[in-house]
View 1 (cartoon, rainbow, N blue to C red):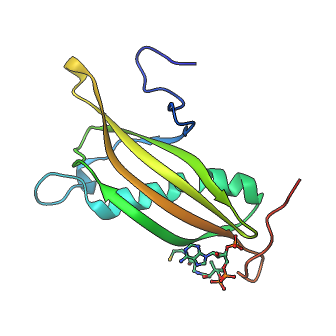
View 2 (cartoon, rainbow, N blue to C red):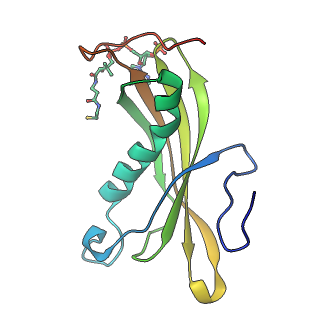
Length: 135
Ligand SMILES: CC(C)(COP(=O)(O)OP(=O)(O)OC[C@H]1O[C@@H](n2cnc3c(N)ncnc32)[C@H](O)[C@@H]1OP(=O)(O)O)[C@@H](O)C(=O)NCCC(=O)NCCS
């Protein structure tokens, strides 16, 4: 369901909204833009949402690929993180994460600011890869 005041819950490519967050001044660099490292941490958190559900337990990030910063992010942007599963392997799940910023409340715009591919591995109590549940 789409609300007229909010970014949609899904994208046309099937990606689903997994997280929303608004950066604060403490997350900005000297130029006033948001640190790339802060955005990467949020993408890592958002990217883990679907793999945790598929793995039904503990996971670890094994790889981050094709991380693209398309547009700067500003304090006060409302960031929406959308994820879709690209691949389910024996022990790993690869997802594509897209980040959109809602900005300029007087004339609301939704701008894609970042995208990346991340791979997570299901791990056991010793931190070793474990097979994904198949049920
Ligand atoms: C995650 C970890 C347990 C995997 O152990 P590993 O011995 O490298 O695992 P394997 O080589 O058996 O690979 C496991 C899966 O990861 C995938 N994988 C490994 N390296 C990869 C890479 N660079 N890119 C994409 N997938 C990768 C493999 O293809 C395999 O997937 P599959 O079983 O679905 O085919 C281990 O690398 C680790 O502990 N890394 C640190 C994790 C961490 O601390 N992350 C937080 C960020 S610092």
